[in-house]
Length: 157
Image (cartoon, rainbow, N blue to C red):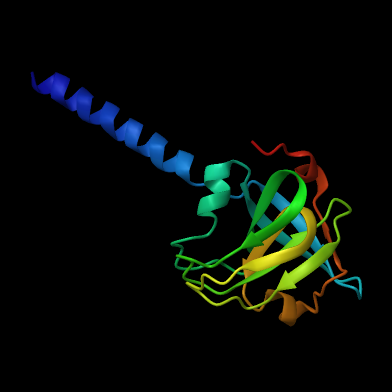
């Protein structure tokens, strides 16, 4: 009887871990390069948010986002998008990126826990979130680019 209970616990733990990892986007899925107007290239290791659940969760509930890291949201097609900071504990810079890899809208140093809408103001298929202050520290502005490389062909689900 004890052996069965032990196996049941292992199975239950495996199911719980599977559920938890399905709620979080994959970690360190790749790297993008943010390119300033001055030509400075900044690599950012990104997690991907490609499913509706992963895009909805985003960086909520995180206590930190290390320098040089971010999250890349990929949508099925280009469309106007809007984000908010509900349940997001850390300030972020949010870069809305069109199909040509151009930053069409930038919201810098967003306010944690805010429910204010942060719109793209243009159709975008990609959104990159990086630690708040990243863009100011590196001279990144609207009109600059984000080289997505192979991640640009990742299909949203």
